[in-house]
Length: 199
Image 1: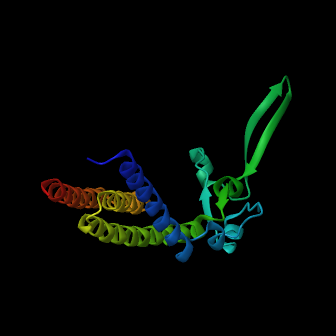
Image 2: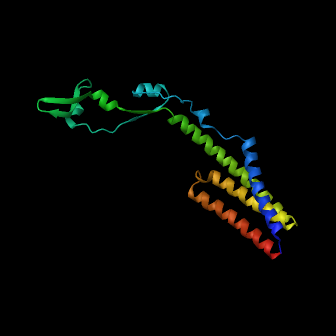
Image 3: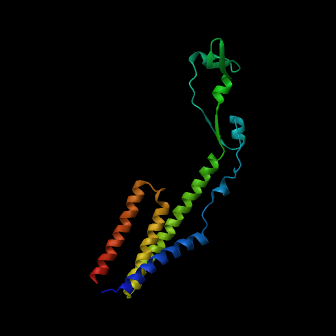
C-alpha cells in the first residue's frame, strides 16, 4: 500500500518532469514571435488602396449602398446626402463616386500575420511531436521501473507532457486528427494500466 510520502513523491516527480520538458523545449527551440513577422508598430493612416498595397497591406472596401442611378455617374460627380436642415438652411455631405467606391480600410499586418500563423502552426506541430515522443518513451520507462513512487511519478509526468504537446497543437488539428490522437493515447493508457494492475 503506497504511503503518503510515496504519493507526494510521485506527484512531485510528475509535475516537475512536465515543467522540465516544457521549459526545455522552450529553451532550445524558440517559438516564433509576432514582431519578427510584423514590424508595423507605429500607426499608419493609409486611406487609399494604392498606398495600402504599396505598403504590402490588404485593402478592404466598405460595403455601402449606392443608388442605382449613381452607378452610371462619372467618377468626379458628387453624390450628396442631407445631414441636417432647418428651414432653408440645409447641411449636405457630398462625396465623389470615386471616394464612395474606394472608401475602406487598410490592414497592414494581414499578410505578415498569415506568415506568422503558418510559422506558429508549424512550431506547435513540432512541439506536439517532440513532447508526445518524449512522453511515450518516459511512459514506457516508468512502466518498466520497479520503484512504485518513481514509476508512478514518471508515468504521471509522461501523461502531462503528452497533454502539453496535444494542447499546443489542439486548435490547429482537424476534428478527425483530435479523434485519432485521443484514441491512440487512450489505448496506450488503458493497456499500460491493465498491465500494471495485472502485475
